[in-house]
Amino acid sequence: MNRDVCHEMLGHVPMLAHRSFADMCQLIGEVSLRCEEEDVPKLANVFWHFVEFGLVKEGAKRKAFGAAVVSCIDELHNATSNVSEIRSFDPKVCATDGEHPLTELQPYYYMASSLAEAITQIKDFVLSLNK
Image (cartoon, rainbow, N blue to C red; front, side, top):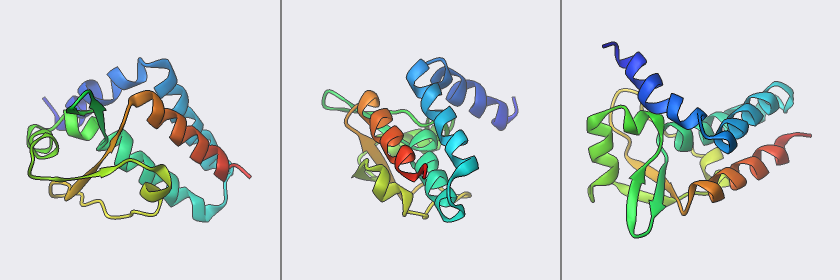
């Protein structure tokens, strides 16, 4: 099966079935159409670091959440093992963090304390750009 199809079906489709998450993604898209041009890369970086490569803490465990993580076995191992650096999720930090290699495993990941909290943080950040 094509990798892109696996990525979309295993990664994004389940996420978009979660109403709050889907609403957050729609908000990112809507705000990207009307925010200042220099804010668009900030939105893209938040999307990259959470929607594609984000992790969520569940109890004491690190859980893969991002579509790119769950759809690639090497990325999944890299993100959930003790090999990778894990940073605390903060959309304001992610927004200015443009480092995201496309052809190699991520050097670090951002982990949210919960999905609900991350969605709230992202919505608040995105709305702050909506001038």
